Length: 260
Image 1 (cartoon, rainbow, N blue to C red):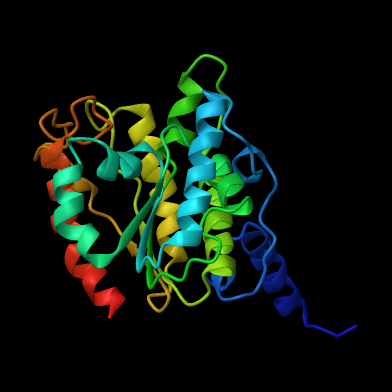
Image 2 (cartoon, rainbow, N blue to C red):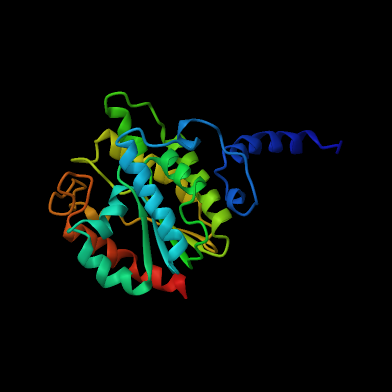
């Protein structure tokens, strides 16, 4: 065993918990890291509308095998509705269809559901130049639903770390643009918004600005005083047509640059 000085041993002791949590920069430069095991990091099938969810999963597996997509959008309903809802379709067709984009969003997904999809065929064989990832708001919000479990900001961040690790294994040549979880709720005091902000403070540390990039565009969806804007988020969560236009305008220059 290597001999170490008391100072070095103390320093190592302080650093080990951070490494174990998978939240330091080296977490995504290494081939494999240990990420804490809990609900948000354990691949799980969605229990709401399971049959429809599994059918959608099967269709996305087929899409993965058929497409030569150059950019993949990955996430929950906010991502899914960009291509499949009337509010999102116009900007999808204008901005992302010409870039051969593929949409791997699914409504209701939490980190554990997306992990299950990725472990069971979604994006298999895909070689995109860029992956745009937005996930986590359902982890924060579901604990306020009947039968929901408590998921902390740290646990949500662990789940996102596990997803990034899986995406890097499946698409090792792709860059990843990690988006901050969008704001939600009526005002800054909303507990779900506050938890999303706490999660964002953790996941922004994942970026190395080489293969993994972080972008926070949340303030663009809010009024100047920080209140939610129903013309952008009609239910203070999902986006209107105006909201999808704001999202597209906000990330398009970065997307184009990262795909070069």
